[in-house]
Image (tube, rainbow, N blue to C red):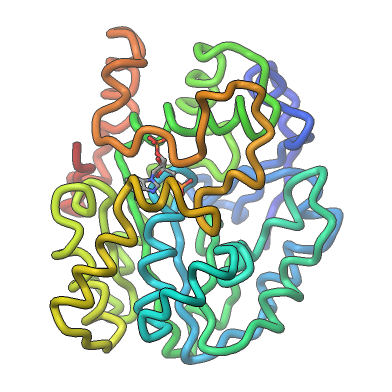
Length: 315
Ligand code: A3P
């Protein structure tokens, strides 16, 4: 049984924005760690049930992450690997139209499209993006299917700073960084909790060969290695020279210039220095968090369950 609760506290109210109104916590009854922060729209529009009943195909690839963990980067790589490195098509069609964000229409105030239907109608093999926790994803994804899941993780300090800029420039957040980070640390930002979600997919990747777990930080360190790892997982094989070409397409500069994946189309910011593909660094939090905030994040990621499951974020 799922439980839906409204968040009516100050911490949540402070991170409400014109795009993100009425946060709800959806959880599994009697299992406090299994929850996901969404907006009331998700329940009102029945995305909650429609998503869980969504028909999954064996050749689907689901890219799951917490927001700001390199999803756009990973999605671009995965779509190209699945689609015979069709750079021409990738440069012609916006990433959003190649890889639907399945729950999008059920979350943001101004999005009226039916992102579930769009995903349903997508030509196979489909690459599908989601930030949901597993208990809100289609039941079929975890039963009787050969569909693949790729989870992309990033350290919460960089993810939180990146999300703060995203909230400010893309969701209309006009509060302080302090309030935002406080909400993040209290698992009140959209799609929270990052730690539990990450650990859940880490554990899944250890027992299910259809689940691959990758780190943003590893992609930063050696993109070619990670690309080859993903290529093998997808049962694809491309010569080294083509992988090099793919890595060039995926480089920070190239993606930043690429209108089909730099998300300038959704950039409503009046700050001309802001870009969705923003800094692209590991450790950019060091310049943007004070020592007190940094310590709070150290506590936030000190997790007995991580140790028990041999999981550590990368920095
Ligand atoms: P920063 O805000 O720290 O720069 P998502 O796609 O999940 O929203 O993640 C966005 C983050 O991934 C942003 O982080 C963005 O700059 C980074 N990113 C996107 N493309 C990248 C690339 N080619 N190389 C490095 N980082 C990239």
